Length: 350
Ligand SMILES: Nc1ncnc2c1ncn2[C@@H]1O[C@H](COP(=O)(O)OP(=O)(O)OP(=O)(O)O)[C@@H](O)[C@H]1O
Image 1 (cartoon, rainbow, N blue to C red):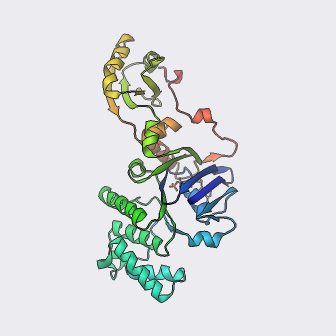
Image 2: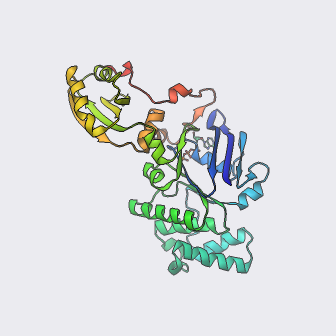
Image 3: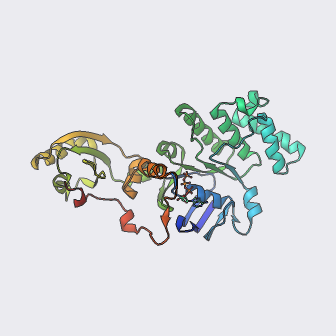
């Protein structure tokens, strides 16, 4: 059974195309991640799937129910945890859950039984009578996720579930999300701009950029698609003479220069073994190498290869813009060629 089926879903805000004709599916029981920088369109996509926002075009089903025609059935079959905390800090953990259960129209017996089950599931039994204001950040997140599961939804949406948590609590929350996925048997769709979160947590990841999906696969397959390790070389001199040396080498899968910096990233079949070859090629054209760094691809490298910039760069571009519109404007659609991996060009000649 398919948990979510999305067909050509689109949302525009005036001139901004926030979500651009997306199509994908999430299988039953999957832990599915939408990875992309701030402003990529992840929240807009989720808000349409949970029926809070009406699509401009296209449609989708959640648990077999159409998001346009069967909004009540869609809402009953999903749980959602928003990016911004939404608990009443003055109420106890139990009172927060009871309030939510009433909103879902649960009768007294079902309510008491489900609340007991959830406190057991989230491991907050000892704190259930404490005001939520006294909980740690991680405990509040767990309670919110548990609250999202109260009415036994088949799909749980988590919008940036670990934003604002410290590294340790973030890891604990990942473990907890995986446990919910396995034990409660719920399909989970989460948005994140944390590379590690998508890699560690998700069965499959959709890489979202500018309202579009650049790639969807398992984290391992996405990394393998790059074709090897990445060697970053800081070249003390013109990068173009060095990158010309890389042309037609059978062991070079791809290469790219880093914006206006003098760093060349070369994807090779085996990083450790090719360092000597790369140094020799640089020597041949008198391009001294100031530093070398070998790394196995991660999803950041995949994002860079697909879009030409890092998630961090994209996110800070949004922040620098005062969190204003960074989505593509209608009519400025990027074509496939521009979106594909960026190889070094003479623009980096210096
Ligand atoms: N209500 C709105 N009105 C106008 N533009 C909007 C609205 N909501 C989102 N946008 C724009 O749509 C684009 C996608 O935003 P969205 O919030 O979906 O991105 P995101 O990937 O979820 O990022 P974040 O995690 O920062 O919310 C951005 O350009 C944003 O400015």
